[in-house]
Length: 221
Image (cartoon, rainbow, N blue to C red; front, side, top):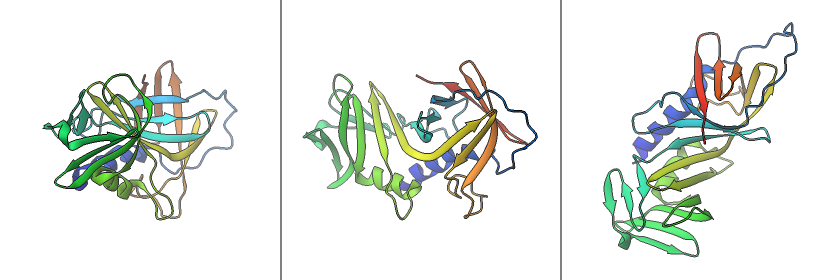
């Protein structure tokens, strides 16, 4: 499981590689800065195991990465589906809003409900333990900070959100992302903490551009 999930995370974060660490031009005229806050889905998923991947830009200058993980795990009214295999409810416990899935005497998922979404397991959870959490945390966290990971369950779909993965700022048509590391851009210098790209906003379409590449995102619900 760890190898697969780590690969998925690496692929989803690799989308940042389009934003090269180029220099901005001081000669550009000041432009009106468009508001890119919200949830954005990339036009194509970088991995067949993930249905969709995207970014969430908060109004506080922080950014998160999300991906739909339904093909990896999802929940029904009283059971779980893991890699296409049904996990009976006898392996799932819920106590004090903490849902735990245990297989072969080992916790796979431990998550605490923070918001109810209706019937069954629908809702928003903080992922706090289990082999799933361990795999994801090892992929994205630093030595000094643990990963802040949220699970969203909506019907037969699941989403994982990596909260506050980076900070960002916009000025004119320039997007600056701070928190750049080799994890996000393998070719980046370890001491580099900032990447810069241009962006264009046209209605519900956001295009992020560097000298050689462009990625198109669509506003998501």
